[in-house]
Length: 200
Image (cartoon, rainbow, N blue to C red; front, top):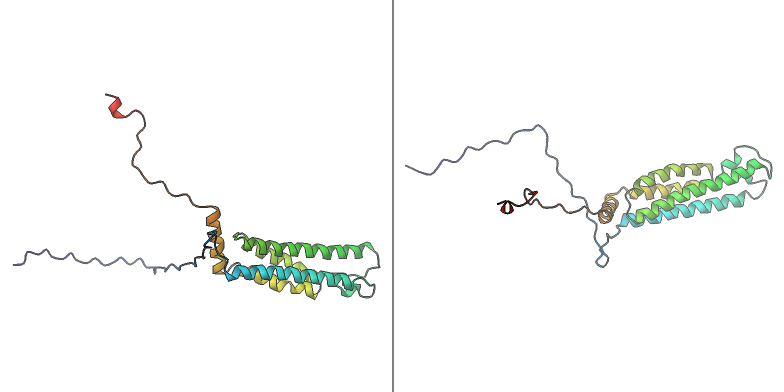
């Protein structure tokens, strides 16, 4: 007669009615061997190049608009805004149009510079700034074809910040700038007051 204990019956796992989600590993950015800072992935380099390319094309478009609008005959063809209403040379309306075109270039250019610089530095909020910059960039529709063309690299620059490599890079910089303090180990209950050996 066998004296070995019987194996416990296997209990089936409960069916929770929902599939188990698999966690996807996020890419970890490499660290620089000297500084220990996160290495910039290709997407961050692309963001900077595209953002500053957008600013360059925008400035070229503004200069072209100023050059074309220097004569009375071609002022209305320099930009869409210039041809909205008929204006007289030297009128305040014409001066306001030129000033408004310059203000558009400053606003859109500032957005591109912010996206490129803070994306390069690894700030996560640069992703939202990129969307805002593209929204402000729609003001270039008041200008000429060069100014409108700057929207393409600006939108691509904003899009690269949402790629997984860029997000991992920004998350690594966030962890570096704001490290999470190590948890204090539990040492058991804390005694307050005099120790029992001093009460005797």
